[in-house]
Structures are given as C-alpha cells and as structure tokens.
Length: 255
Image (cartoon, rainbow, N blue to C red):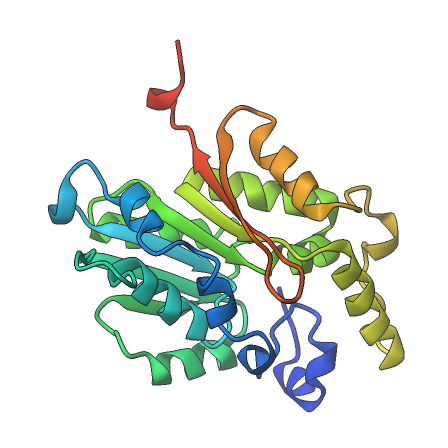
C-alpha cells in the first residue's frame, strides 16, 4: 500500500486506509476491552506448555498503539484475576510509518510489544512475521487481533482481497478476534472521500460482499471448516461486534 503521508495528515477525514492520526480520541480502547469478559482470553490462550511457553499475539492495523497496549494489559493482567499471563509478546503492525513512530515513542512495554511498519496484505510481509515467530520457537501466533480494519482492506482490495486477508490470518494464528465495520461505515467512508473531492474507492461500487458484514466475515472464516466462531461479544457504542474464532489446525480436525 502506498500513500502520501503528508496529504493524509492535512485532512485526516480522507484517510484512505483508515490511518487516522487521532483515531483513539473518538474510538477509545476501553470500549472494546469492556466487551471482553475478564480472564476469558487467559483461559483460552494458555498453551499446553503453560507459562514456560511464549504466547505470541499479532495486532494488524494497530494505528498509534493505544488499543494494542490495552489488549496486552487485558491478556496479561485480567481485571479481577490474581493470575497473570507472563512471557507474552505482541507484534503490532500498521502501514503508516508515522503512526508506528508515535506508537514506538509511547510504548510502555518495549521488551514485550514490538511496533512495525508492515503491510500484511503484501506477501513479502510473511518473512517478517515468520522471523518474529522463529525468535520464540513458534510456528503460529496464539491470537491475531483485527480491530476495525477489514473495511479498509475490503474497500481498497475488493472482495478477493478481503477473502485473501482472512485466509492469511487463518494460516498465521490459532485464534482470531475480529471487529468488522458494518456496511453503513462503508457508505460513510465513501461519502467522506467524495465530499473532500477525492477519488472514490476503486472497489466500493463493485463489492459483492455487502449487507451484514459480520455475517459475511463469519461465513468466510468458517465455510472451509478451518475455523469456528467461539464467541460474539456484544456491540460497541458505534454498533460493532467482536467475533472470536478458533482456527482448526490439521491435528485438531477429525480423521
């Protein structure tokens, strides 16, 4: 993905890839975290090796990192639980180097959270992801977070791009937590670009995947039998659900 960073900064309402510089001022992390039952992820994600086995998380589209840090705290120090999840490491990526620079500067856990400029829709990014996994002797991330970025991938890369992205997450992660934007957000994003005199999203008018986006994403994630929907967590104040999927590895599949 290529963009003119200075142009994006001049008019954040026209951020074609969702790389809003003040995103968390209008979508604070706490609204997502409050939907996740304390300790649930701790119970699910603890590996067979217990605390000795590193738990790796991938956060795609991390922006300036505030939600990444909140998710890390939620995982490692669940509210109301005396137990903690140590040896946890996050790789948080975004396509915008300016946002990543801000995240790196404010990072309270530099030994546990890594912020990296990365376009996960580009197959060359897999080398970086696999190198990170190899550092800890792992073949997959225990969980992937995909928080309000599916729309931007869908608008910029079309139906096939969205399907390829979701399938890539299934190859990389054991669990995936997705916060899909509803269709009304697609219309709003397109309207903002038009209002500002910008070129419309290439794929907006030709998308076949539309309507109930959460349902469509669930079908994409589960139709090949490689994953199942475990939980659907409420809705945020801006009408977005959190969908938690468990990915079935070959060893998990019935013979």
